[in-house]
Image (cartoon, rainbow, N blue to C red; front, side, top):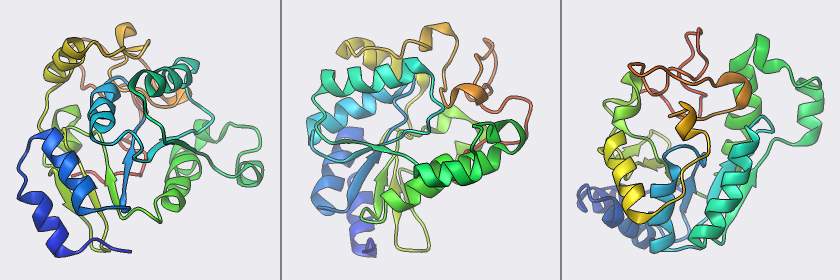
Length: 228
């Protein structure tokens, strides 16, 4: 199953309004669409828009086994609060973990391999039925995302849809407050971008929002998204 050029153009014709983009994606890509969410610091806004569009859309959460306890609690709280009925925890198979990271320490000496094991490969499998994947990425998050488009096709007939690409962190915070959406518990503790616990630290006031991810390493993405 692939996304056609006609479908891509229909989505691009919608413009930049996040709610309109989601509604169009649901209409143009019936049965082909899934949402990817980290249930992180800014995730609530996109998920609120998803709930308003169709609360039964599949929402994929990469349950790496390495998350902060606060993230797991937030994942359940937010899904219940918003009425999302189809949140799917995507995990690596236990036998694969046993073969490749039995001690749970792969992150310490080969973080790329850890991300591949716990995120990239499970997501590749989980998204086989869904050639269109909605993400919450924004251009303002990092230098590697500044050129990101709202509709991102690849060469294999698949696309990523980024309804919030043009939003700033301040705009998202203001809209979350206006809607009364619960914040991630770690957001107030200096975590603007929240990944797995071993590889995430708080950031300073003037740092890039993603500076706390894989701090001290050249690594800037886990591999499920390509830098743009």
